[in-house]
Amino acid sequence: MSTVTEAVAVPQPVADLESDGLLGVFPEGPRLVGTQCRACSRTMIGTRIVCSDCVGTDVTRVPLPTTGLLYTYTRLHVGAEGVRALGYVDFEGDVRTLTDLREDTGPLEPGIRVRLHVEGDDWWFAAAPATTEEKETDS
Ligand SMILES: [Zn+2]
Figure 1 (cartoon, rainbow, N blue to C red):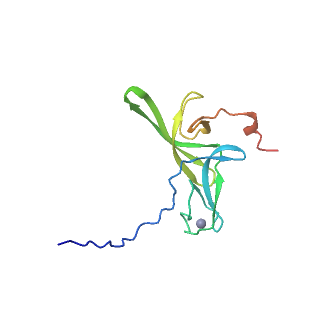
Figure 2 (figure 1 turned 90 degrees about the vertical axis):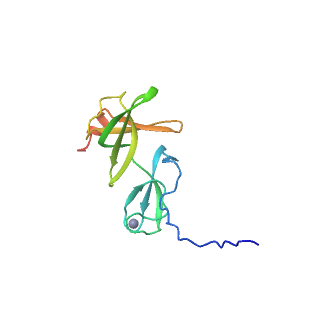
Figure 3 (figure 1 turned 135 degrees about the vertical axis):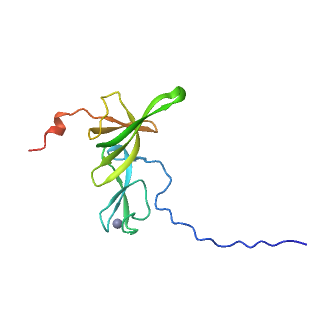
């Protein structure tokens, strides 16, 4: 006597975000990976196969800017690791990411400009001190 179990086809959700890491290599260097929709111009974080806005599939992989604005942050007190800062960074084009933050280049405060730092596979954002390059906006 045997029992036959038939496989039932269960509809699976379509993943729009691939599980690859967010760090990618571009001609300009290591950058966080974004996806831009050619149909509606929306930019999203990560490698996606469909647009999160219009569900279009005409999407392309793009590098995200290396600087953004710190939306908000918190400090986690994690056992022996000590204090870990974690926050949201907003990029141009309405893109937001959750990221590790470091406080070695300046104090953190919502609204400040932060810059991407990469070391091997590790990446984080830290305060970006104002430079002459960023002050030249009226040329
Ligand atoms: Zn779209």
